[in-house]
Amino acid sequence: MRRWLLLPVLALAVGCSTTPDPGPTVLAAPVIALPAPAEQDTAAPLPPATTAPPPSDRPRPTPSGPAPTASAVVGAVRGVDRAAEVGLLVLDRETGTEVVSALPDRRFRSASLVKLLIAVDVLEAGADTATRKQVARMLRLSDDDIASALWVRRGGAALVTRAARAMGLRDTRPPAIPGRWGDVLLTARDVAGIYTHVLEALPAADRALVVDALAAAPRSAADGFDQHFGIPDGLSAPWAVKQGWSDSTRDIVVHSTGLVGAGWRYVVVLLTEHPLRTAWSTAAKSVTAGARTLDAVLR
Image (cartoon, rainbow, N blue to C red; front, side, top):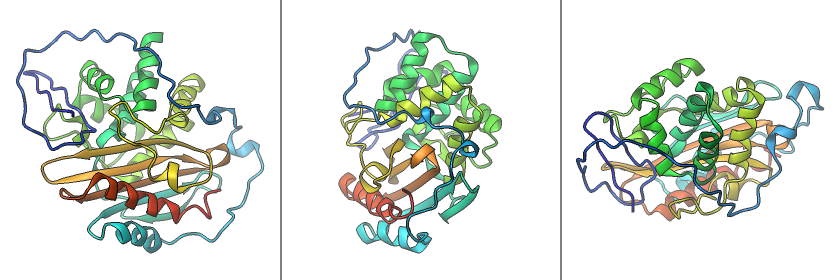
């Protein structure tokens, strides 16, 4: 179980909780010295993303099936949870076009997707070897403790504003309560923008760190949550994913996002919001159902 931790000046918060928030606990602000955690290779990684040549330097495959429709994807999600709200965007990096979209500019709570922002901000500021290992573990295992410490170290809400400006994210906003990083607001379009920035703007070593960590995401996250829903269980193509799951006093959100296909041709972002009463398993199954409708084309 994860709990919010509020500090007097800058708050720590856990973004991937599996129980409703029991209320803040006020503590004295700590001095954070974050050691490099031991590597835990709980699953064999998929082939590294960074070995593929840039899109312009390799043959351009064509999709193997008809383009899905937004109504088909949203309908599949709502076939499992009819009350779900859906934000969807699939980009084809080969053609520079949108394959399918549904409410790509609607804001959702980020849950652990904010860890992508944290990772980019930390790496672009310059990170030593120990911190780079922490970033990789945070992404691979969706480690909340590392995310909380780096959130504080990089200024909390200021990190979100700074990273969004640097990446040209129009609709990403800091959380209303500064420490609750899982309540950062973002859109499917902005999440796709983060992935595009990682692939096209980060130095090669930083790009490799991020993408290879996402491609090695094991089934069990650091908090024990099964993070192989949506893209990992719904698509047959290679993937590199950052997933998100979080509850609030109003709703739960379950997201599946990442890079898909040979050479990471596609950027896939599937965001969902559900009534608070929804079971985690139901929400996860709804995201997988939506992702599965994309399988014929994203190969």
